Image 1 (cartoon, rainbow, N blue to C red):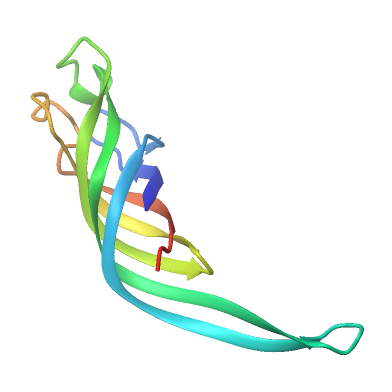
Image 2: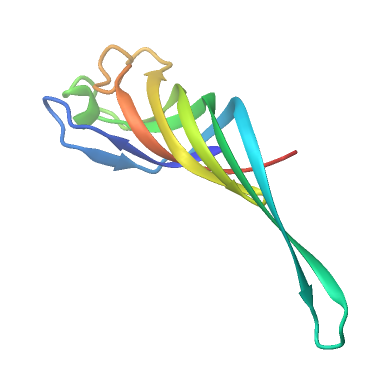
Length: 136
């Protein structure tokens, strides 16, 4: 599962923002699946079976991602720019359609380097869009 878009609320020094940096997550949760079975007749009279698969899931996610580090997101605490490694964790509600999954995540990121005390989003919540592939 990945989180292609994160929305972070504003802080005292920075406005609301959307982030689209690389994130990879593992998801563990409870899932219920629904199957819709139908039959259709083709022009020569043969009957074909069609199966539609839907799933609904809720659970926990954790993983790693990148975040831009610069003077704006550290209140001028650093004067360089780099991509920092973050550990992300949270809860997710996911809907599946065939092999693909889409959902919403509420999570928290923790920067994993020496600038974690300066990062304005350290331990702050975000809302994300999840996209994944059902492997079972």
